[in-house]
Image (cartoon, rainbow, N blue to C red):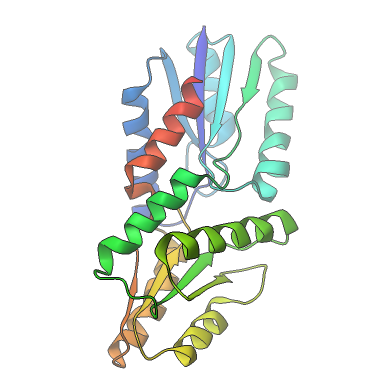
Length: 240
């Protein structure tokens, strides 16, 4: 019997955890598979091991693992495979198929562009866009953000689209914000490239509010999971 195990990152934020669970539950309602379980890599329960065991206890003979991750950083390449390798040893009779993270997809960039336009109408060519990534030491992630940067610049017709990171890569959030604030006196749109609310998105929002109180025209977009396209991507990962 087939089962699907969804794996989110996990967060210390109660709001973020609730958003992730609500999002996955919406996907589950659209997927016609008898066994479906939610799990998280860290910080939020149930953890991967618990979700996997629940699938087995319900009679699963094949488990499709669907990571709810935007890009293939260390968690996808190392952490999740290590946990699954241990589970494969404990349950050798279970076939495990692991799906890819979302990656840089044209339709996701289209969705991000729609989110940006929804908070800035009209969008002027002289407006600045600042993309904020979680950050990683993996060079492939930095290359992905170059693709994201170029894709949004082309779609939105903006002269200035920059990238900064919350950790593990440069420039960091403060430097990224200071750079765009110096470059323009016009509108600035900050895009946290994150799926759900949490401590990281709250950090971005605090910085944006600080500059807004000083009279700067700056706004921040909502988590990417609010767009229907993200739900569609996960559903397809689970069923194809």
